[in-house]
Image (spheres, helix red, strand yellow):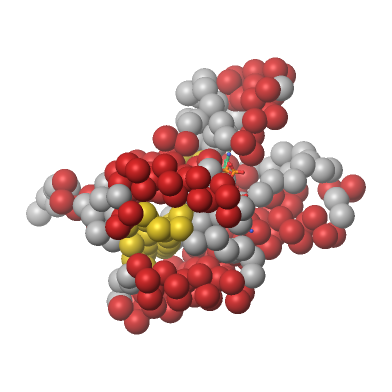
Length: 261
Ligand code: NDP
């Protein structure tokens, strides 16, 4: 029997989706793509003003009944538990979680302070465990849910000066596998998307650096930086039933960077 994908398999309308770190950058684009596909989106970030501005723009386009926002720090256990509880009570059962919030800190390992190492690991990796664990409790009870962790090409590759980041994104791969091992049997799908070099505020300095920019263009088979829009289609696919039997995978969205030397 040939299973043919029909448009309805990609339908996520009405599903409640939390995208952490969605006040700007990649998270914002993924949340926008979800809202365009009919989902009820919950925006998140730490800066309340930036979050409110994004919420206002989304509300104007998609309506207040499909756009919510909750500022909380994804590294704080109590804040995460309260944030997810608020969503479940005020918005509805959480169906889709994107663990996207993350930071970069560029310093050679020999000069890297322990506090900065810990800040990067906590923000990029421990947060995905904390938000994922809290969200999964309700999803497991209901027997359905999708978690998308945001990895990176640095899940597979290292570069000088970003040791803590590379370590955190490598951890995201195995956290995705660990979640799958324990939760797939309860009806959850957990995968990761691994963006290549995407033009956002996080990478603006690199885009402005001519030498680095030329290196990216030469090193990427697609000969360009990625855009945040490049990540929306894969995220939508992973959030929908079209990917129901895809579990524990890291999907690289990098213009081919990780398959060439
Ligand atoms: P940006 O710096 O543009 O945005 C980061 C977002 O995360 C903001 O919304 C920020 O909120 C939020 N955030 C940061 N810390 C916290 C926290 N402790 N709690 C809650 N929210 C927080 O980043 P990008 O869009 O570039 O990156 C998003 C994700 O994609 C990250 O995980 C990153 O590692 C990953 N990635 C990025 C790539 C790139 O080339 N840009 C490539 C590969 C992966 P606020 O606005 O309030 O500060």
